[in-house]
Length: 108
Image (tube, rainbow, N blue to C red; front, side, top):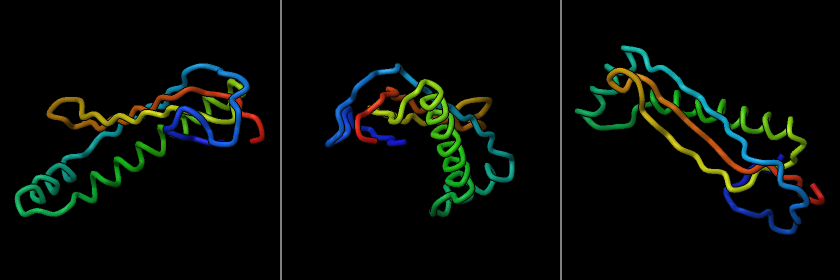
């Protein structure tokens, strides 16, 4: 399965458009991660705990997007857009939303 942010796949004609597909993942950040992230905000540095949660959420959202596209008979998703949001009480939830267009491309 080809996943791309571009509207086309170089060298492959799009034969059929199946529609929009979406993958979403919401991950909670626990109190300890929040505490250590706030300490890093004060002293500087990266927050590995949040980066790990974002990576998990992004992988899960891509997996859902790809599965939805496969279920529609697609072999690629073009025009992918990735959005990150902080939600919940005091920003305690991280959300990744990925959308694109499921297509059947020739030669894949």
